Length: 562
View 1 (cartoon, rainbow, N blue to C red):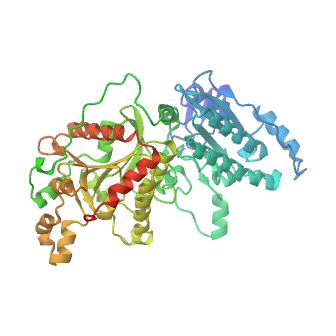
View 2: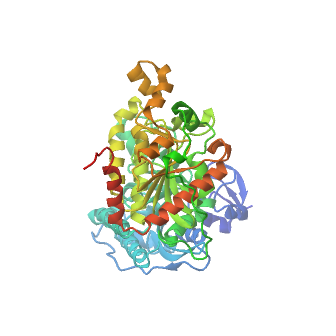
View 3: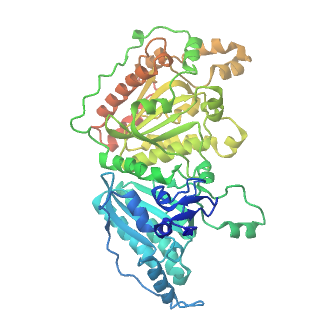
């Protein structure tokens, strides 16, 4: 019986049986190939060659190689135990490649994309002048064709045999990604095992969306170097994709079988554009909005608060499920945290891409505890800011859904700059050059709510509330007793009727039945119609007018007659 322990599915082609190098399970070779090189027993994602990866991701027969420009072969005349040119010849003979990256242009489920795919077999996927030049050339093709740029990384770091010239490739490739940012071209990284050193510290971690395969190790310094330097044992799972997702550094951990469809959905957003509705799409229903305060019933303030806090009210992720096609959630602030109390991503609303950001409370006790009861930490606001900047880059409108008791008032939140994070969002939103619509869907509590509320249009559901402080907080400060919360709620004038009367919100979306919690699907349709109409009206404004209109909206609050 022929058996092998592969590091990539290439070995499967000549082996009838495969032994997993991690769990030792024996797998029929053809099944292992059908599983895309993933062990069915333990889920180990074995390493792939560049062309294997391309065949898995791109539509059959569409991937066309991008011609590689000439580069310096041996700029230093480097030799260790062997001359550098000998090592290059050996790598080329072993892999059939001329360098550690293959760049192609083609389609992924019909959507055009350019990709640079690294191959760890070629000198450990090291970054030298040849790799840097090929990646920059591929980025320039993506720029010229205005299609998404996908980077699949696998590397031990910069190529030592090319000295400082190799080091310069970090800046060179990062500069190419900056040019794609300036042009509004979507960039996506697929980080595979391993991705270290100069690659991790440049083009691998700069894209708009970072996906990682399960178990992929990513970092600047390797674990052995770190342990030897600091003299400490590393945490369980350190530098794995799952560990980094928890730290807010990658958007998602995607099993290999799901990568192609996820990439296709992301590429579709770029091809959809940020402007007009797709031709032939049926017109959305007219919005049902209330603009006159007297058209809304008078309501006791405390009753309004209780309704706004109802555990069954739809959450941001509920609305995403009802309203957005092809929604892809993006995670993390890329600075070390991923707050579960704020969620966001990209999806299609009425056929047009939008960036959705909102508070997430959850429904049952377990979920509410996991989501910190919808009270964001600084990482949550920084995640929101990151997604807003992505919206500005791609020219997509932003929809924010507000439902929070307020920003989390904990020690760690204060140490990590809660006030700074909120303030930065207020400034960022005031200058964002795309349409912003905010909807208060439940509880709009203090600056923690306003940090998602600086918009061109601010709407509220009819049972929502919005206030400078919670009734309990107000009662504790002014009446010296939380028991006076109902009295404080009435004094704060925080219900939808009062918000509309003072111009805090521009319109109120009626809720069906006894409230949104009684018919979430219809509530979502009403909200979607109102938001779609608002975006249609704002779409005619150029970026300067959008910013000016938004700033004027907030400039007027509290101003007396002149």
